[in-house]
Image 1 (cartoon, rainbow, N blue to C red):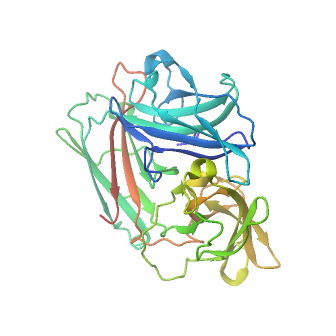
Image 2: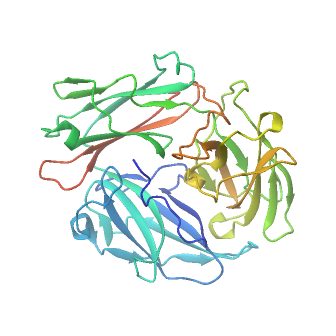
Image 3: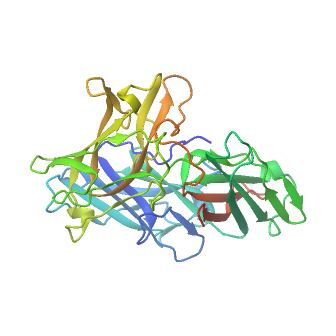
Length: 404
């Protein structure tokens, strides 16, 4: 399943894009069709010029390719809306305009369940796209029961986690299982390593059981690293030094060591999520400042990885393997370095490697290690296309934590 044009920022002035359930920045944007669920969409536009942003929704199939439907078939009300709520930054040394909107608005809301891309664009011209965010709308007519266990295979017994689940298809009319029913499994709401094309192991009346050993087996990873940037004046223990007088501020993090050979330690993390917040300010949305945050990763023996690139990775990077997040090796210091322009808040992240050539796929085993005891969230998405249907409906969603 490719990323497609999903969770992308196409305008370099756009920063700190977030879409989450109201009041919970560590949540994924999943709402129930016809419910009163409210999402918050927020982002910053660097500079002090107010620009004319609008948004629309694009209905997609399970593979995030656009559905063959007109917007009149899946939107109730207008096909696009202007984002009229904004605040020019105050107190912050970095100039920006903060925009926000509560979704869905009554005059423009999804009328079908499924995958949606929220598309934000300029000057009422959908061709001037500035960013996209994924949004899931479910009608929740299919119950799902999930369990997490260690795999049977001795090769991955201590390093991976196996997801198995059972779904009740009694409310579905299925004649062609592979064509009508699609199942996706996400780890920590990541789409870059989603398990797809899963088929049931057993079918008993209206129950489908997914328990085949090779399917939905994920590297468990390790608890995410973190940095508390909620205050630039009072630095947290993860910050080595800071120059808060410069514009923007320069924040240097303590070097992160390679953890593959380290003993596993369990602690509460946020599974790659981040939040915009502050311990000093009333409203960090438009008062929070930006800083150049310097990340340093120290490989074992201070030797570079052979034939590998290293990336900073997390929800705030959308787990993208682009030059924007690729680290540079400093031969003199024997470390990898990367500077990112980040807003005040709390960030969790990890370091990923990819081969220099061939298909880019993030691998955390060389930098973080994999331990089956790691706490992760797993989400099952059930898509169904009726025989007369023209898109994949999202009929069931369930999330479980590996520790509970």
